[in-house]
Image 1 (tube, one colour):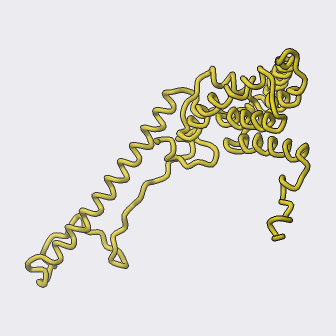
Image 2: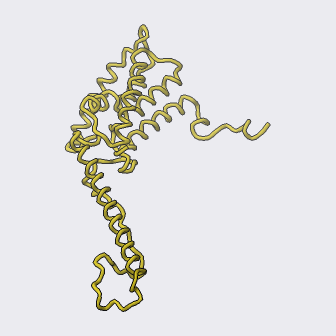
Image 3: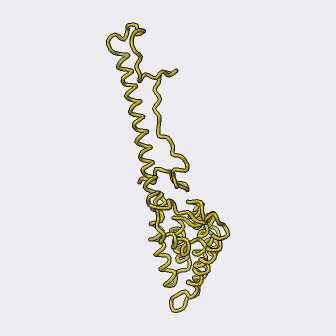
Amino acid sequence: MGVIDVYSGVLFSSLPWWVAAPLIQLAVLVFGMALDETYVNRTTVLTGAIAVHIHGFVAGDVGLLVGLYADLGLFVGAYGLYSYVIDGYVGNAFRLVAFFVYSPLSVFLVILTAGPTLFGIEPLFVPALALAGYANVRLQAHLAPSDPYYFGPESKAAFESAVEADTRSETAAEGRSKASDSAATDTATTANGPGSDEAGSGSDPDPFDESHDDGEVEHPGAEPAAAGDSSERGILPEFMRRL
């Protein structure tokens, strides 16, 4: 018998299923909150739906309401994830659904009350969502003026202006780089041209010739945008907005 045959596993696989499953679900929910660094955001819908599906795999089956809840969460969450990747604008409908229906607390209570069913329907499903929604409203009031959510740009115009600003910044940087390359080429041509071995004290200086101690020409790169010019948060870089 080899080492693999007797290895009992680490972390979740070495725990009882009734301990490992809640820990995995909790880790998925925390991961969604960490992506955009707030309680509810554009990714928590998808991670919440995944957590509910994990409950279904562990429990073996779920009722009608929880099943629809998990499946719809995958579609809505996929849209939220796409909006997060491009740092795009999401409408009020998505914001309401994410905050009141698929918040981490809503998902937690739905999983907690998903056990008992009556004619294939979970009678505690709606009360669980209502309780979570009330708790979210109280949390928002408690944290005022701060908000326990973040959904990216506040309007389509803000998103489009951010994209245009990034495009203009890149265009200007490319123009400066090409101008610097052209200046370097002109300097090399002038140095290697006819009469380059003669004294140049009487000639006019080249306006594009920039002196450096090491003789090299520096090529300016793209300047980073100011922190206030972007609504981006989370772990993805700013250029992902333009995918």
